[in-house]
Length: 115
Length: 111
Image (cartoon, rainbow over all chains, first blue to last red; front, side, top):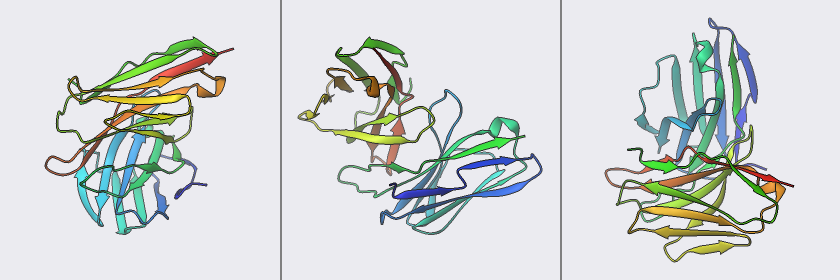
């Protein structure tokens, strides 16, 4: 049983659609993340929210829009995506500490196919 | 140079073999280190933390070499179920926290 839950697990959308991915963490963590993993490629960090403020954005296209209403919930709003955006989108959370650690826990991921 | 580098493999080993992976990192100020395991079409899961003194968890041994800036993972008595991708993770806190994942090393254990 995972402490990070994502919905939907699978999503097929057209290039003109608008959809959202949802993530909820039940671990009491203070940071949440969106990662993208394309086929046979490494994890790509998309967004980080720590204490409900976005602290990092790796030049992700504006067709991806994150929202973090509180420390337990994270959304990724999708609009006018391209077929190359088809990938596994992983939500994660962690308890950021400056002394040591920052163990990241992942949700099971949302498989996105853009047609 | 990538911040975290791993040999992508694949490593093909028979059951019962011992296999070792290395991971190098570029930031000498890195503070904490982990190994994750990712099965095909699944999310990465924490395998073990890596401590300065080295640590062992059953058949798995992780070590850190700060002088040479690498971490290692040793798997003894490989099982078929060990087949997966192993990701190296490095944390640093200079100017804000940063977590870097390696691209992973693919392991196939064969009967």
